Amino acid sequence: MDLDAITKHSASHAKPDGLILQYGTAGFRTKADRLDHVMFRMGLLAVLRSKQTKSTIGVMVTASHNPEDDNGVKLVDPLGEMLAPSWEEHATHLANAEEQDLARALVAISEEAAVNLHQDAFVVIGRDTRPSSEKLSESVIDGVTVLGGQFHDYGLLTTPQLHYMVCCRNTGGQYGEATIDGYYHKLSTAFVELSKQASCSGDDHRTLKVDCANGIGALKLKEMKHYLPQGLSVQLFNDGTKKLNHFCGADFVKSHQKPPEGIEMKANERCCSFDGDADRIIYYYCDVDGHFHLIDGDKIATLISSFLKELLLEIGESLTVGVVQTAYANGSSTRYLEEVMKVPVYCTKTGVKHLHHKAQEFDLGVYFEANGHGTVLFSKAAEAKIRQLAKELEDKKGKAAKMLENVIDLFNQATGDAISDMLVIEAILALKGLTIQQWDALYTDLPNRQLKVKVADRQVISTTDAERQVVKPPGLQEAINDLVKKYKLSRAFVRPSGTEDVVRVYAEADSQVRKCQPCI
Ligand SMILES: CC(=O)N[C@H]1[C@@H](OP(=O)(O)O)O[C@H](CO)[C@@H](O)[C@@H]1O
Ligand SMILES: [Mg+2]
Image (cartoon, rainbow, N blue to C red):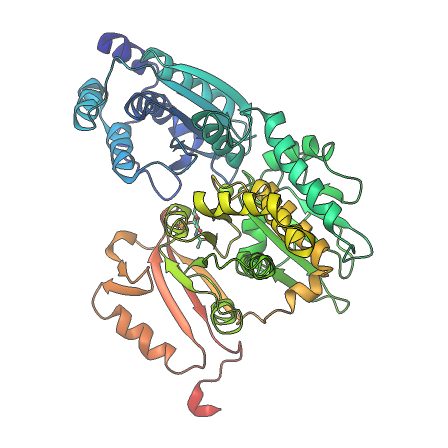
């Protein structure tokens, strides 16, 4: 390590005095003008991680659904997963080191993680469409090169596309080709094959309106449209001409439970929204009475897992299917999955890395956060079995096995992906001949509210039981219990956010009417 060169370069990426940041649920996030030093340092860290794992590491510059003048950065581990927890700690340490301590912090991380400094390093970089992202990704590259790392800058990518590239590069091309064309080709081939198997089209008009949150999803979906079959017409709204995530996007629609601005919705039309870096998707429609219906990650997980179970039943394979949710999943969805569909459901802490990890325990692990971030993981053994059956079986069983094989290829198993999930959903609706209203009618969501509360120090709240119970401060959980027991089918919890300086409060019950049980 040329520590002098590192110190010299670091001086042009100076850390603002007193700024302390933490590698949170989705990496570092704050105002873009406070992040230059973090980007440079994450370039350095990516090189160390690459040397240690002898693999390509990804760096994504994005702040997802945050306002346009925020930005952020996260590292992507070798198989396209989120960074390992011990390295999140290294990341926080390095980001907060004072200028004069930076070299020492790097040496300490190398020693603690037993990094072979003579090993080659390769880093791939992607960024979203924020005005600040290009400059910040140059700072990442500065960090990579000063530590002798090689790099490939993919430029503008959705977050899941970067995860895909990392996974492809580290699996010898087995997962797909590590180019943007390779990504479109893999997904569209699987989608076209599935579409051919659909005997009925579901809706009369196979048109989908997509709110792209004025983000990277618009750019990439425009590119992908040329690869899609004629049967599906995708109409883009909020396609990048206005402010990112402003009154639009999946996060806005989910948290406000209303349509985004900038989309023309007619009664019963199928619509969906991506978030700012296109790793989340939410569906919705307005009925003839003008009522808005939200179809969130829970209902997406339900549609997908029921489809997978039907195919497994058809081919006669008893592979395990599990669904992973967080505490934010609507109680109706959990009940429907467990009681009607007889699928085991597990609850993890918020943040996809927790869900992803749990989903790896099943042959087919379906995971979705209620906000629309999720995918399906197929174990190596399950994938091999399905591919073999697709070759061997004939007639109805063979058709089902081939469908499953295409579904494997259509999912981005590295991480939740709005484009890939959208195509999976569109394929399932067409294959099952379902309208969005029929999908919505699977179960009725319990009325629910999610609020953000600003407090002096959100870390005074600590939780247990997958964030559903408060441990500290004393008395808070008892107060919640006292309120909750007055209502039917009610549930409430509070937890400190991992991405914003707020405490999140969630509550649901059988009715929105303010009547407690003794009054009913
Ligand atoms: C309630 C909620 O939607 N929380 C989001 C949000 O995390 P918080 O820790 O709640 O701020 O951002 C995460 C990263 O995008 C996402 O994974 C998660 O689902
Ligand atoms: Mg996102």
